[in-house]
Amino acid sequence: MAATDFKDYYAILGVSKTASADEIKKSFRRLARKYHPDMNPGNKQAEASFKEVNEAYEVLSDPEKRQKYDQFGQYWKQAGQGWPAGGAAGANVDFNGFDFNQYGSFDEFINELLGRFGTAAAGSPGGSRKTYTYRTSTGGKTGFNVNDFGSGFGGFSETSGFDNGAATTNADREATISLSWSEAFHGTQKRLNLGNEAIEVRIPPGAKPGSRIRVRGKGQLNPYNKQRGDLYLNVELKPHGFFQFDGDNLLCEVQVMPDEAVLGASIDVPTPDGMVSVHIPAGIRSGQSLRLREKGWPKPKGGRSDQLVRIAIATPKDITPVEREYYEKIRANRSFNPRSHLSQVKL
Image (cartoon, rainbow, N blue to C red):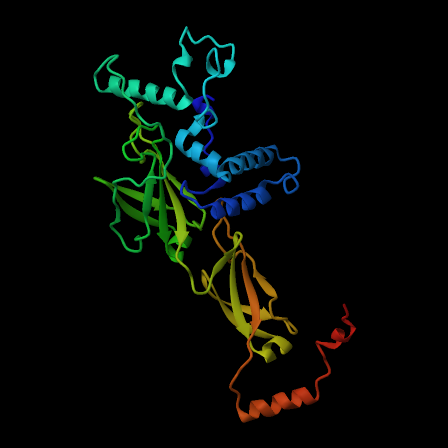
């Protein structure tokens, strides 16, 4: 596989290289639904994305395949395999007389190859044989301390393409950034310290859990082409006491009193923009949701999603003597029986 054909399966699934098996499965299911041909009839781009998602999950869901992919990157399929007699893969390819049979496995070949690069870079042309371990895994922590110069940024952690000094061709870095809901909704500017380098990072409005922000040219230095990779920030939001996500929409739960549910009412409900008046229709049931259009989260291409208001009927525990009197009158004169159909239930 040519280097240009390499696919970053973690990026395709939108997870970090340290993601758990459950996180990988959850992301796969979400993306498979999003790009499924039945949901995107005639959409060739969605069809291609669906195939990529399935390919990525096939590798990352298999512990053995994932370990090889993490360690050997684009060469993971060849890793651990001995060279067939007569040369690499038995293909009719002219390697200018190079004898692959001197290596017992693909691992030895890669280690020798990188060893030559390493000694040449050190100013020893054709020098003594030196072995490096070839890795593209981002599982190892680096020595960088990424500190926050502003407030609310204590949740930043980092992994990179360098593992204990081993040679690598992956100069990108992964990091997790923890934001407040206000910062994520409105967008914010963060000042980060990457070792001896301070950078300004702009977080656009609408970041949410699973969002991935790319900061170009702020990754590690590639030792071979002397170019820097990119820094990828994976967004996490601190828990909120009222809002949560339901897909792209915001979801909240609001309690109403029994009389409001029966007779209908007008109540105030918080939104990201402030309080709005919401009409509760008469006869609403607990668990039903009302939709506030374009009152939800900012979309990447402009506009807002919706806010869903889920209704819960609150039952008071402590009532006054007057309230009790009226509740008893309602019970004595009630015409509606919500359990009337239960007499027909049988095994």
